[in-house]
Image 1 (tube, rainbow, N blue to C red):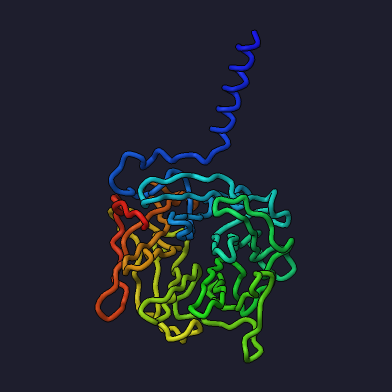
Image 2: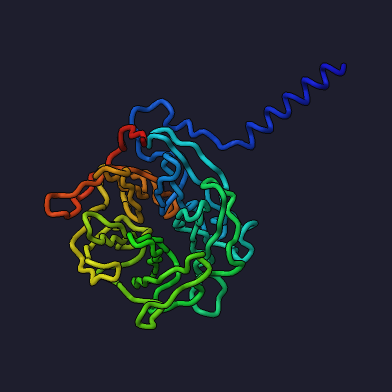
Length: 333
């Protein structure tokens, strides 16, 4: 009897550990390419990062705002085989969030991981919400509220405080570029991410809105130039797309160059709200984005995809070809 009880307890412990562990995504386990979408489920606004020689994806859980109260993450050694890390952040860890938790931006600093997010979809300066930040010792979370309140909770320069992107410049300064409603601001972050630092001219919020900007800003450097990318069109429609500009500083001026990501009526619609991956030490680039399958009409039925991104000899970004195959395996060294 004692042996039987011991075996039962051991089995329960094993099963409990298995249930508590990150979930392997079997959707692409036997594929030679990532396939698009790269994981199962409705996800949007993906943030792509590299931490500890692993690729990480941090998307919005694409659902109605009142159901959009948590985020999952996904990690991979090769862009093909993905492991799901469920509920890395939710409203239990950020008490002031009640709905519309979306569009994460993630960065590492000092051995800690910070996730910036928009929440509550505020429509005026009297509502509680805006851009928050949470922190964890692990890129898979759990993330807990860093401030106990939003980092930005006001509508400045007519920019709704959503869709934040965190950019670290070569001098170590962290900036946050953000904004909805067709307006975009850039701010300087304090070293501990607890607030903002005014610029030398006394301004705290600098408006850098380029022509055509709607939402979803992204910034990176390539060959000494600052590339500023954003989404245009309506997120619920087929014309959602990504455009870009190039500047000499993080503040521009940024003049729209062209569209580099859009729908392909034979593959998917609504391709937009993206991020990019540069394989360290190379000029290999990937674009991670969401799109809507041709079979879907629900606005929230969006999926996460990856394709290659290339530059021409002048440094311009070539139009991205969206595919069903996705990308081949690329292990980080």
